[in-house]
Amino acid sequence: MSETLNFNPWLPNNDLLRVFDWREVFGNANPVELELGAGDGGFILEYAAGHRQRNFVAVERLKGRVNKIAGRGGRRGLANLRALRLQSEYVVARMCPPASVSVVHIMFPDPWPKRRHFKFRLIQPEFLAAARRVLADGGVVRLTTDHEEYFQWADKIWSSSAGWKNLGAWNADDDPKSDFQRQFEAEGKPVFRCQWQRL
Ligand SMILES: C[S@@+](CC[C@H](N)C(=O)[O-])C[C@H]1O[C@@H](n2cnc3c(N)ncnc32)[C@H](O)[C@@H]1O
Figure 1 (cartoon, rainbow, N blue to C red):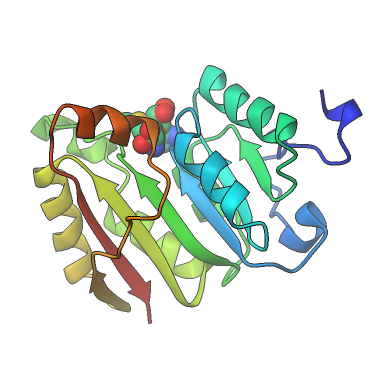
Figure 2: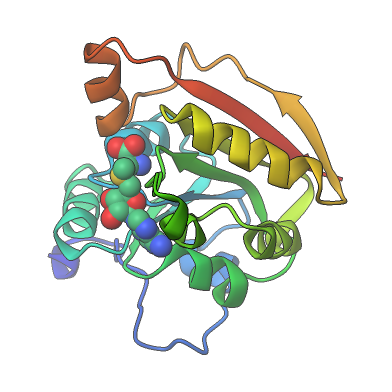
């Protein structure tokens, strides 16, 4: 598919020692935003289409899902979007240059509701340290979830980590909805959101 495009919708995941040079990846110096656990791309495909002056990387570990993002992004000519099939934690900790990302979007992360599985949750002190390293000054992490207990867990971790400011919820009325968001809203479930800024 990429032969027929003037850009490759994929970021390579075969060199785990690579640190991406965003200017080289996108061919411009526009701000870079990540979506971690992007699912089928319901949010990021629309968001990237609506913000062509920003660059986006959709990180997703499941092949079928990330294939959809790359395929749809390519067909829609979204030269500002790349798909990357890897673990979010690794991408943030190892593959992003320091101070190179303006926004990290996390939409409906797997909540791992059982106590013995809390260790699998994305939001952990180590993740915050890694996110803080890759965010540019004033950059933010935006979390949206239906899971109130996970939301409180995340808030507690952010509150006890130095170098962050809680900016509260943002106005997401004009933001595209993710696939899980559509599903939860259709079921009438409340959605919790907060953004934390790197100081
Ligand atoms: C509940 S779904 C939400 C998908 C999408 N963000 C949405 O709101 O529609 C969580 C997604 O995160 C992905 N995921 C879970 N853990 C991940 C990890 N460590 N790295 C990358 N993706 C992950 C899952 O495969 C799944 O697609």
